[in-house]
Image (cartoon, rainbow, N blue to C red; front, side):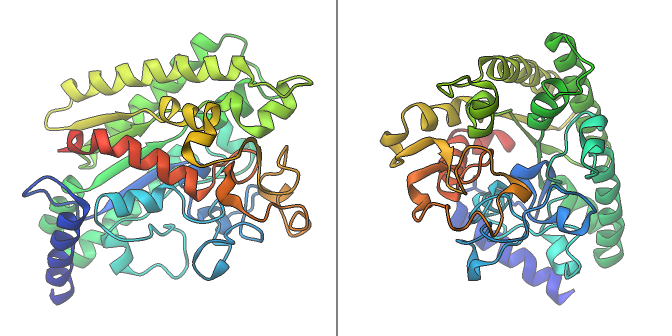
Length: 349
């Protein structure tokens, strides 16, 4: 009980420092999603979608490759900081995870996952259903530690973030083995999966839920290289697919907010926050936005961005919007997250 009391005091102090509204407490942050918010769950899976090796993590504390798909911190860590909970959000599957870590939140996200169960199956990563199962497992652990009443309080006041969809568009819809030819009907399916998941979270006690939009996928270096032609332009079809899905996701968030009593369902627009960094990168202190820092910057991601890439990897990733051919640098992530939550923070309360 001493630990729980001390935790409450610490969270209250941290909330004040984070600029939360008065009398608001965020005891924990729980995150579900893909590589954007995976702090290392894939380290424990038999999948090729990993990054627990150099040069990943070179700007992380100690220069350690933790399984985060970037040079340093990823948005799940920044979310924990933004809401005044803690500096880093650990992976739930981390074998060193302690109950103290769990009480203040974890990420269940898995790199290469999607809303579509087939998307996760392609690379043998945690599906959204798998992530929900792990969350249920964590609820049981929290209840065993603090009791049912306190656990219910923690869960209802925590922040829940869902960040998926990019892999559904790039791998499952536009991939070489796609069985879909109608993006409108496929994005309808994606939204239906999202709706079911949010309602299941609500049923398990979640009330403060944020859903992150798909970024401008057609402008990531890999899609420029593979689908952007000789000039490596943005792949407009992928961007249009993202815009279509995002419009439906935004409508879903508004609809569920009115349907689910006591809920705060917040749509977080990454697309229109991220695109200016790519189109007007110099205004944000960047020099390169069409290539990643790792290797040649055109295709390297996950196992292709490895120790052999180090010799070609950029010296100063602060100049780059992208770390590898798909994921932003820590600097770019921070700009995006700060801008989004400057306007959206109060919508969770």
